[in-house]
Length: 311
Image (tube, rainbow, N blue to C red; front, side, top):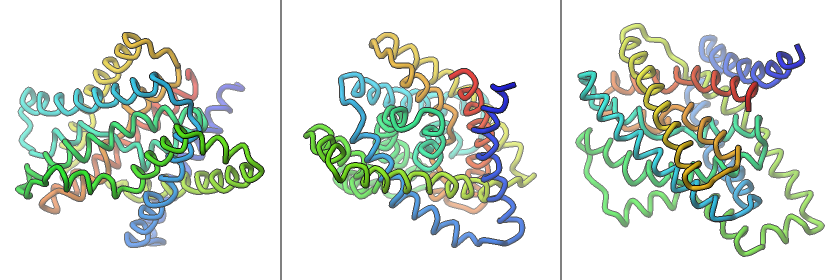
C-alpha cells in the first residue's frame, strides 16, 4: 500500500497539471498566444538554467562522453527505422519517418525526469539531449525541410542556428564552467546557497508550466486519428528496439551507472520534438503531427509510472 501512495504522489500531480491544461483549452481560459508565450519562457529561460546547472555539477568523465555517443547512435537508429517502417508498412505520408526519430527531451523530459532522479539523474539525460540537439539540427530538421521543398542550409548556417539555441548555450556553459572548476568554486562559496536557491526556484516553476502546455496541446480529431494511432504504435516498436540497442551499448562500453540506463529508457518514452509541427507545409499535416506528438504523452506517463515503481 505504501508503494501505491508513493506512485500516486509522483504521477497524480503530473496528470492533474495536464488535465488543467486541457480544461483551460476547452473552457477558453487561456489562448494559444498565451501558451506560445509560456513555451518561449520555458525554452529560453527555465530549460537553459536547468541544463546549465545539471552539467555544471555533474562529474565529468569518459563515461559521460560515451553516453553522448550512445545518444547519437540512438537518434541514428530511430531515424533509420522510420524510413524502414515507412517502406515495410507502405505508409504514404512523407512526414512519418521524422516522427519516429528525435526526442522531446527539452520541454517534457527535463520537467519529469528530475522528479524521479533529481539533479544527478538530470545530468545523464542532459548528456543524451546534447546528442539529440545536434542530431535534430544537422540531420532531422534539414531532411524534414528538404522533404517539404525547403532550401538546404550550409554547414555554417546550421552551426549558427544551433549555437543560438538557449538550451545548447546552457549546456556548453555548464560543461565549460564545470571543466575549468569555476562552477565548483562558485557553488562552494558563500554565495553558493543563494545561487542554488535561485536555480531551484526556476526549475521547480518550469514543471507545472510544461505540463499545462502539454495538456493544452492534446487534440483528438477523428479524421486523422487512424494515422496518428498507427504512428504512435510504430514509434513504440521502434523505441523498444532503440532502447535495447542503447542498453546493449552501455554494457559493451562499460557504462555501469543505473542512472544512464534509466535516462535512456525514459528518453525512449518521449515523443519526437514538438518543433517538428512547425515545419509541415500544410494545415492537415500540421494537425497530424501536433496530435501525434501530444497523444504520445500517454506513453511517457506510462513509462514514468513504471520507473517510479521499479527504478
